[in-house]
Length: 80
Image (cartoon, rainbow, N blue to C red; front, side):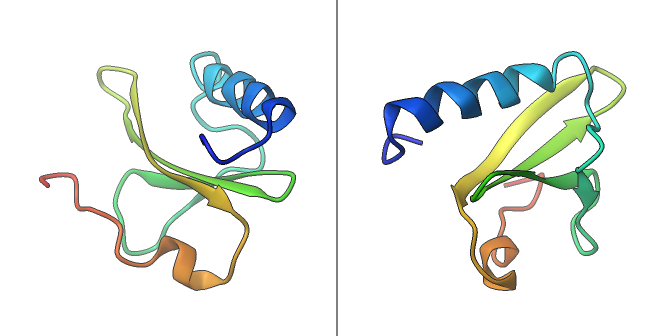
């Protein structure tokens, strides 16, 4: 997120903080090959996060500008 302009950084920060209220916002999509991992869109940005529903813990896995499907490839596994 450091490469984002200040406006986008603050907006992305609010988007991430919103996950505390709603772990699965309307635009969140589960990732097929990664259990408990979701992709959320925010303007031209993508946020990939992992949810531990039992503890209500969200781990941000990747944040970046929108790209093709390769954006979600090579994500670390939960054990890594």
